[in-house]
Image (cartoon, rainbow, N blue to C red; front, side, top):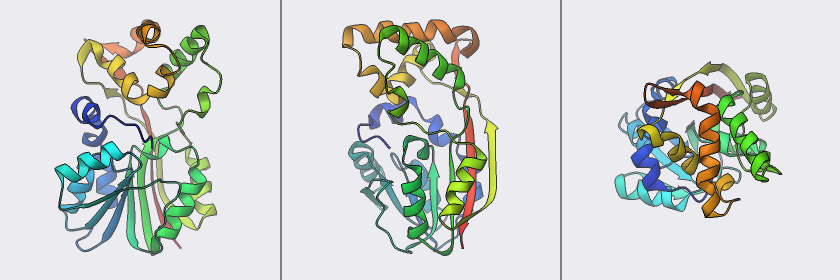
Length: 253
C-alpha cells in the first residue's frame, strides 16, 4: 500500500474500486458484533458499508492522506495508519477484509504472517485483489514504453503483485490459513473521466513509474502507452481495462 496516494483523486475519479466490491463484501457476510479489520481501507467507503451491518470495524491503511480522509468522512469508525507488512495485532479479529489492496504489497508473506496472528482461532480472511494476468495489455504497453524511455530497470519492484490461485493459496496455508474458497476471474473495468481516463488511472496507480521521468516527458510517455493500447482498450469513448481479480476466503485453523 503506497504511502503517497492522492485521496481526492482516488475519490473523485476511481469510485469503481469500491463500487465493484459487492461480491467480496457478500462473501465476508459480516455479522452483528463481529470485530473486523479492513486491511488497506483507503478512504473508508467499504469499512462504513460493513459497519452498517453491525460489525465493529477498524480500518488501516499505510497512506496518511487516505486515513485522514476516512476519519473525516466516517468519524464513528476507528481508522489508523498501519503498514500491512508489520501488523501488530494478536488474535483480536473475527475477520480480516481486504479489497483492491493486497496487490500493492510485494512482501505478501509478511502480510500472511500478520493476518494469521491477528485473527482469532477460526477467524477468516476474505480478500479480493489483482490476480495473475491482471491488466496484461496495459502492463505490456507500459513495459514497452519504459524500455523506449530508458526507465525499465527495476520496474518489477515498484509495487504490484498479481498471484495465481495456487501461489497465493500455498502462501496462506503455509501460515495456518486454510483456503476454502478461491477464484480467479475476468472483470473488465470501465474507467471514469472519458478520453482522459487512462491518463488519470496511470497518474493515480502508476505514479512511481511516471516519477522516473522529468515532468516535461511524462505526457509523452502517457501518450505512447495510449497509442499502443487504444485499439484494444478504448471502446465507445471509454477506456476499459482488462482487470483480473483473485478472490479468496481462508480460515485460521
